[in-house]
Image 1: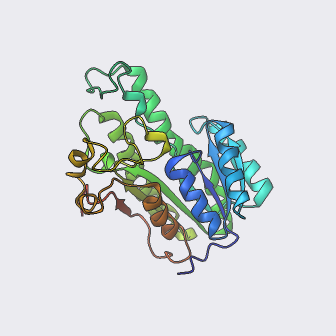
Image 2: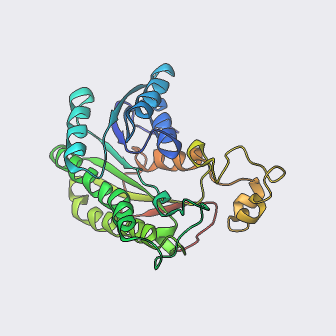
Image 3: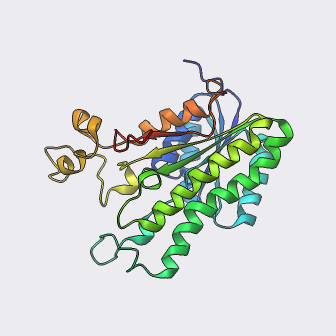
Length: 271
């Protein structure tokens, strides 16, 4: 099915690896001009080069999404290179700040240090707000755009030992629904995708993308929470989220806004 995004300009945050990288690859393959953002410049440029070698159009731009001035400068650079931004995908975010360094376990909220709260909310919540603030004026001016935020099922149902992360992701969901009501008049669609455990190159320490039920004794235990995962014998992959993202930001989804699509193998079946 033709997605009707040929020539569209898409900015994807946290796209130096994993889900963001795959979204960039898919959108570029569909003809979009892609801006790959990452906190680490080398990763952003590497993915952009990878897309270019495959015949797509992409640039890599470093920016810390928790810094509104860096985000605005990135958006301006993107517009200067490719023109007005049509698609904003808020993918940057990670719960790793809450891992216990000694045993790589999770911490309870009562045990978590206050500085970690700010680290998690700044990246996962304010990073999204900063990016939306940077691109919305241009979308409103041209009366059109797509905003998609990659959140977690933790933000929909709550996850023990990830209380602040769950709250930050839930905040994005509430923000997106409210924003969808505000900007619908300008033909701007605002949606979310909620993912569960997703194995990729950035999660190898705990979720090996090459693991099988034969090689990883923990995988069958994890798959108990993922109905379709039990059948497929795997956890989520970046390609699962990327396929859904491509549809929601495409010309095939003009009447979908204010929604959250779960792409988590049935982990959550909240209506």
